[in-house]
Picture (cartoon, rainbow, N blue to C red):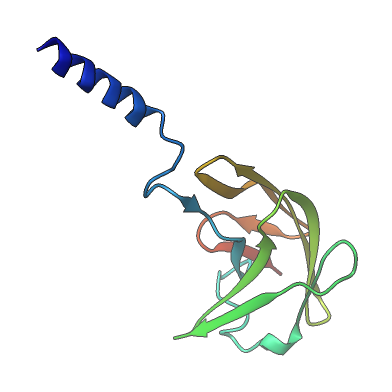
Length: 143
């Protein structure tokens, strides 16, 4: 009986000292931010109304480089999905739509890594230059 107890104890000891993560390897992908641009008084989407076209959207980072984004337009629902990144960084994106809409997206991303997982988290996001309503998607309110 004592021998069986010792074998069980040693087996548990080695089982708990395993270096592999087993099936628990987790990775989050890059962070995106989705928003829609709506009229301040009616909350109607400016693209759905036909006031602007998707080819009038211009987004650049604080270095003046163009930023990757997708225009999602289906069933009169028109969102803009902006790629923020997957690494630790702070940036400011300037969004221009046509000649009269301009605002900034200020954000901070934090990448954390451990032995069995890594993730990128959006730790701060601010919209400057236009009022906004938080939610999914965030609504940018324009005159």
